[in-house]
Length: 126
Image (cartoon, rainbow, N blue to C red):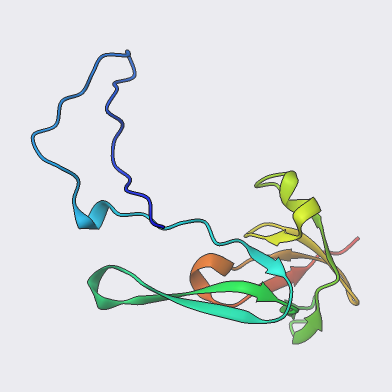
């Protein structure tokens, strides 16, 4: 199910906004597909201009950038903190900026799993 998104029919003042046309295909949004800690699964979505976006539906591993500049593929244990929404911690949802636990220590997610199709993170020095 997709949601049609456009400007609200109400102004900030509360008055009604009357449009001269109906909604268009390019105003179409997509449903929220959260990336969770689970078996690896990607979803390829069509986007405007004949392009595609790869959304991460589930991920077990993360590409971790260590302080010495090396990239290591490590397992994601759990989500510790998520500034986007505190409820995402309980549900283990990965978004950009989420703090995760790995065997190498805590890390912050730097990529957008819903757009990039990959999960990259930077190690946090404690």
